[in-house]
Image (tube, rainbow, N blue to C red; front, side, top):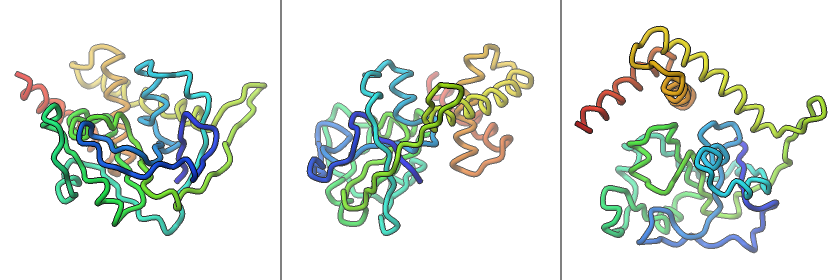
Length: 226
């Protein structure tokens, strides 16, 4: 799997900061952050959607993890239950403060997949999108930035993936509009379409299974909000 880090043009072991727990914030100090290149819920899209420092997207580098890297994948809230924790600030009493220093003993990197699940994302408030946090710089291998020249326009492979993801989400959105009255606007249907596609990609659901799961979670959130 290839990852992309924004904000720097190359990786430097010398500048890598050791992981330290941060009791005032969900995320730790230090480490290397990134997102999968082939991911519609990655850092680039989050920054563009929230107008967060878009100028820093101009610098980036791509990397992979070594085969020996010990990768912890967190795909659902239940995956957090067995992980070590620390006591954090009361300001985030409903969020999970992981003991990242302890996790460094068993893992070289942590990858979290929210895929648009806002309830799950609230558990790790501050992890704004699907992300990887590298704990050990020795497992990082920088790789070339894959760019393509199409009719004079230089495109990074991530841009091509975003175009494809948009098309796939649009197909799902069209189905939702035709079959579910609650999706009465394109904005609602597209938002759901992206989330449903994420469920299909990372949980191996069929489209119908992903739609059923998404609608059940949506109904639960609406009831809890009443």
